[in-house]
Image 1 (cartoon, one colour):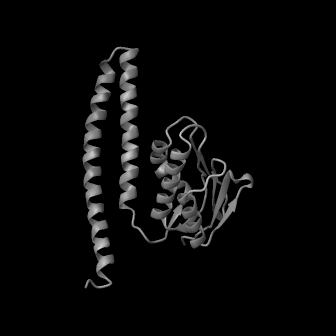
Image 2 (cartoon, helix red, strand yellow):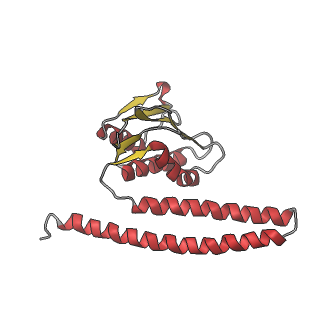
Image 3 (cartoon, helix red, strand yellow):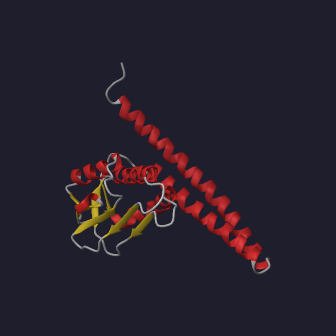
Length: 208
């Protein structure tokens, strides 16, 4: 019979292997994108004005979106699970932005406002990010068109504050998991009147 330590050890070994694979994949992606961007730059210097330049610009924009999305996915994969870390909510959401836009691509479906000076907070980052992505996916399935998700990090010095704007009457596993994570980290959840949003408040963490 396997020992009690065998399961966690295998999980740790698996995550380490995935992390090594993610680094290799990111290295290959960087090399490929370097070639793409270099050749695009040369083509833009010689392409005629008008249509050809616009087409090359669209190709470059698509490549940059792919770069941002792949970095976000691979960073998420490499993130250690099960431990609280000190992060700024604005930093975490900025890293997730390409994936959230990918899940909610329609115009006006996703809005993000980041703070410049929000304090670090202690939270299980990997679970927090996974819950946000699950929430976005569940919103996309329930609200394929129209306003869907708004995230705003408030400018507060003593606490990390995230305001969520949501479709009316929404209740999802991702939303419940977000609330549970915030409470586990010593924070609080405040529901907006009418059920169209909520505020997550996490105590600021002193890094000194």
